[in-house]
Image (spheres, rainbow, N blue to C red):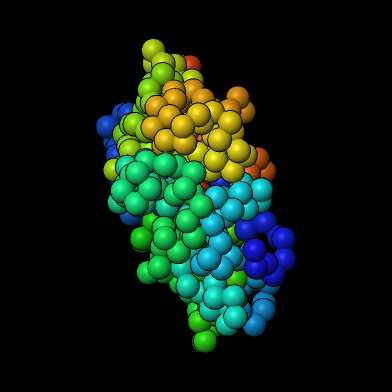
Length: 335
């Protein structure tokens, strides 16, 4: 592993997707009204420079400069182990000699490999379904090579435009020679924007059109849905009661901890993917209420190092609010 330091890049998909935002349960999208109005006060354009220290590179002041990166020849299972150890959703892949960025491996790539996406062919076709053999392939076999990046001269506004416009959770920062200089994530941006007082509540930005899964359903069905609908997480619901969440990070941890190999007898991927979803569910579920203010929700996510909060009303799940939702809500309100 090639590393420049051990500073944590961020917490817990998505590669990178979520369902389109729908109207709230009252049938009226309150956020649309608020965001189209000028507001009570004409605050003018937000000066992002007031939120961060003046440095040579604004984007490096927001993001992380000391990034753990790996070479293209490192095995997939070793990369997963590193992501699990540090709680990363993504790892930049660099040339070990020049340090130039060659790609990135994300939790989404791993789910694609495990759950029936185009990268599942590596397991199914090249290795005849043998999971252990596939995971010992080099990361270049599944890494994302054509990716969005930012130059060191970029501003916070540049990062915000790509994150909200293209729903990308993390952007490598490169210098003029293509050398990796840092990374900026949704979480980094949220930490800056959350200092602005918001008038919005969770119900104004949450996703209400949810796809859920039963705890006894197979892991394969969960990962297939996450790939097809570009979700990083799925609520696990039993008889209308929230049982837990299954996330891209949960699957990474399942692989990276070695638990998956203790359950294998033949090495076939079908053994693991046929296990029930409840196998991956952890007990530390944190929820929020629809009337909770965006600042409070952001603080809870940042403090507890989580990327999503299920929204509960009258003991029932009515929506999800994610880091992306909060970032977009703050940004639109301040624009």
